[in-house]
Length: 472
Image 1 (spheres, helix red, strand yellow):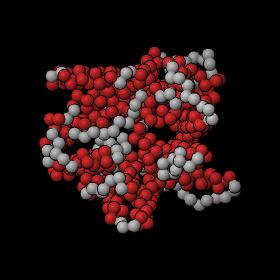
Image 2: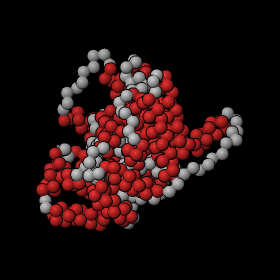
Image 3: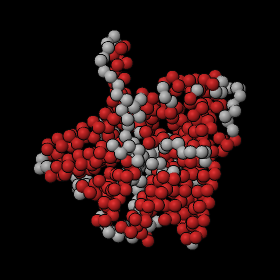
Image 4: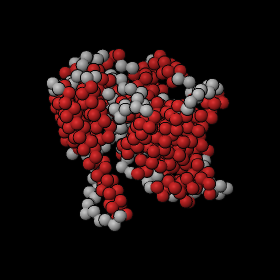
């Protein structure tokens, strides 16, 4: 069930008023929203609701056991059991075929034949996201940062449909406390919710889908058949596509949660305005960045154990982050590029006598251009289905200048300019728009929203492609 579809619209039009009726009484609202979330998740494949339920029971039982354990050794053992279960399920569904294929390829290099077979396992939608949320629950319990809640509340936390299939990755301390008290539907921030949903739909349905269908898919599908200009614009177009697609989904998810009375953390903050790769990761997929920082980088030692260990930790974090995004070596290469860039930035700042240059307009422009293009080179590997395709893309940047470029249209250039330029708007602009929208009478808000949806529908292509991050 995709957000920008008639099916989801009908589903939400049923769920929203019933949710508002039940909101003042949490004991009634929680089982209702739990059932609604499982219906939402079962729309793809009803069999995977048992996987979600099993993940819920597994982590709740172990979190409670960890909390009640009397010794540190017992707590640590139970934590490792919980992590092994979560990572084992994730590894089986997401990486089994990848590891079998990689093992066979490596064995063939030394003349061995491994009798292992591929299974073509169907990947459950959203498993990477709700597995990470489950891990944060048991780890926070182990650290003493969170006291386990009831099974019912934890089940709602893990399955709440706005974030279920593609995030954001919400910490237990951010959502579970919101499940306790009665909520007043009259105090829902509808103006911000409608703004986020409308802009999210526009980014996904218009910007992302337009760029995908008009240049990105063709260029990455057959880079050898396109000019250098088409490849360059195609790479920039994909950078905008994945941002518009994923941040659009996040905006819709946050807006839907707001309508239901709940606040989610911010997940994007103008990432293409970043002045360094470190700054980029403070702005891109922020809930994943902090998860990797708090549950991987810092436990590995962070930057507390010397330069070499710091560089190792940065590389391991980004390599694992790349592998989390997809079961393929191209994703590992994407993570490696970011890891190397982070190490280089870290080493530059640690040079003896290093002084941070003055923050001038010229320096910001140069830093942003360098950062954006490093990110775009990494996106080539992220989007390519093989190293051969990535190699053809990068080689084609230098070998086909002056050739016809019919895919580089004014519409494509405008979509890229809007996608990037919107990230340079002052932060006060969207808040001012939301404030003005909120001051309109109900009828006025309905007219503006209806016009925005009609415009999105008119400008968008036929049909809606799945969100990119659904397969991660």
